[in-house]
Each structure stands twice: as structure tokens, then as C-alpha cells.
Image (cartoon, rainbow, N blue to C red; front, side, top):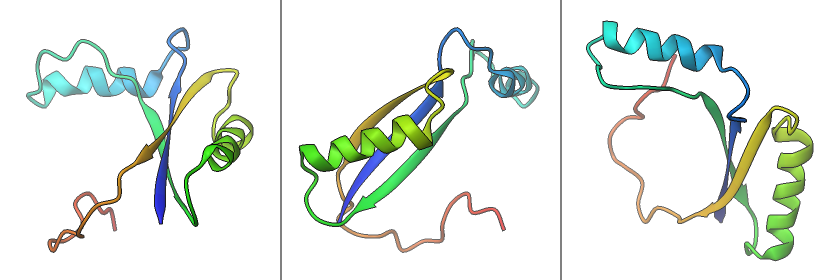
Length: 96
């Protein structure tokens, strides 16, 4: 299986209140020197079959019509290399 990643970010001219809140909180938590934060979304799509031009075109169409609001968001589509082995430790960042 191949993995295609779609990253969605607010366009630069759109205000990002969540990113601003994170940016203001970071110094209070001891993380100084971060000038700006932008918040976005990441979609990982596992494809059956090869990742060819037709498959990428379908993913771009899905991103443009469903995954991103193209009025206020930009998106990128990229193929991610498959990992050779799964980590043996527990999942980091799992919020249960």
C-alpha cells in the first residue's frame, strides 16, 4: 500500500486564531523564540495499487472538493515513503 499525504493550511492572509493562541502560550510554557505559529490539518490516505498520475489526480480532486476549503485554505499533496518496520513502543500522542 502507498501513503499519500494531504497537508491543508490556512492561506497566509487568513487570520489563524488557534495558531495565535498557541504562539502566545509557548513562552509561558518555556518555549521562547518562536515568532509565529500556523495551525493546519494533515490527511494520510492509504491507496490500493500504484500511485500514478491518475491516482494523484483523484486525490487532488478530493482535496479541492472535500478536504480543504479552497476559499481560505491551501493544500499540498505528496507521496510518503512506506516505513520499513513498525515501532515496537506504544503510540506517542494517543489521546484516550
